Length: 126
Image (cartoon, rainbow, N blue to C red):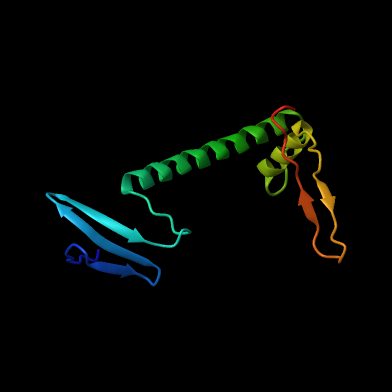
């Protein structure tokens, strides 16, 4: 861990894109300003730990679902698949459940350019 001493109003840079400024020191609290591009995610530690835990739980649940689908596939007499078993089982089951979606209206440019998809907003009365 790098430890630096800064006074209010002084800054440090992290790489070329992130600037951290000490805004105020009040008792045992420090206000920090962070100037970073919008694509950089910045979290307080407790929020970051919570997100990490939720991602871990979601990954475990997805793995359990894949195992359950493989068990269903085997129960229906198709046997074990070669290679990515659970994924094929998931694709086979989801194909029977999925409903078709109506395509959006397309119009082509008169100059042979890219296709533009137009979607109309519904009126509140409809």
